[in-house]
Structures are given as C-alpha cells and as structure tokens.
Length: 259
Image (cartoon, rainbow, N blue to C red):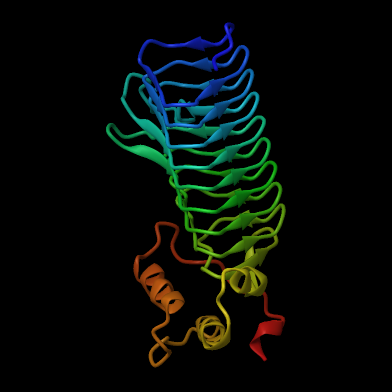
C-alpha cells in the first residue's frame, strides 16, 4: 500500500506488507523490512536499513546527514535499526561519520516526538527516549533505559542498561547501569528498583545489585560478590573504560535502597 503522492527512489527495497503514506519520501539506497509503516510526510534519507515492523510517524527523518562540520556527504555511512521500533513525530536520527560504519538502533525502542539521536550512536533494545531527549554523537546506550523529557547526553557518554534519567538531566559523563540519575550536571542517587523488578530482577539477584551499588559509591572493589547476570554485565561495563573520563558522581543523601 503506497500512496500515489509518495516519492520512492529506484534503489529502495520494500519488504512484504510495507505501507507508505501521502507525501512520504524514501530516497534510497534503503531497505525496509516486512510490515514497516511510513506515515505521511516522513522522510527516509539515503543509506538506511530497517528491520521488520518499524513505525515511522509524520515528519520524522531517519538517516539524515551527520551534524558534523567535517563530514563529507559523499561518504557512504548508514543508519540501521532492528525490529519493532517506533519513531514518533519530528524524531531525527543521523547516520554515521566514518565510511562503512552505521548509527545503530536495536529493537522495540520508542522515540517520542522531537527526540534526537546523533551520528555514530549505538542503542540496544527496549529503550524509551521521551519528548526532546537528545543524544550527542558517539553515545552508547544499553537496554531498557528510560530518558525523561529534555534529557541532554554529551557526545561519547555511555548509559548503562536499566538506567533511568530524570527529565531535563544534563549528562556529561557515563551513567552507571541500574541507576537513577537527575540534575544538571547529572548525578546518581539510587537504584532503579522499579525497572529492575519489572525486568524480573528480584531476591538475591536484586540484593547483589544493591550491594554492588553501595560498593561503587564507596569506591570499593566488587570482589566477592555473587556472579549474577547483572553483576557480570556491570563488571564488563566498568572494565570497558570511558572516553568521557569516568562516570557521574553521587548525590550524597542516603539512598532508600541502601538499607
């Protein structure tokens, strides 16, 4: 189902059941997997690959040129997304800057209106960016992260899985996995208990995460703590190093999860 006013380039591949609304533009080269829905006035720029069942709402722009003054528009770079993502009105996501690389988004992410993902970013699965949330270039986001409205994340920052960022938070260093963050500049202040429990992390696994959070806050080693899936991920995340010079500090008030 392609509206007669839609403009679709010759190098565009459309999977089964793709719908394209009135005045939408798909420039190509591009590949849209089965079941994708492109709403009226949406724009898919060159070098975009989408998996299955993605929904691109009106006036969203996927694969726009990187907002990098040094970028040569003739360079072949990509924007890639997995399956089941939702890109609401006015969302913008840029393609990468280095030849042969891609800005990558996983599956089942939800981008609310006017949120922005800069060039060379990587996002995992099941993340939510609320209205106006903005990621600078080269930001890395894990899985099941929630970013409140107007959050600003500086380039090269990492945001660990299960983190939640308060609306209008200013992030200029890495955000620890499983943490809640607020303020400008942002600081950690407690565990994301609701998010962890919703994901089925409870009992001894939740106690292990809580103990690890207390030790990190005190700048202590994680040695001796159980090897749960969450702590395995946390140890690997900490060992990976940071291009922003470390992670955010802590609000000094005692956290409720530390009892």
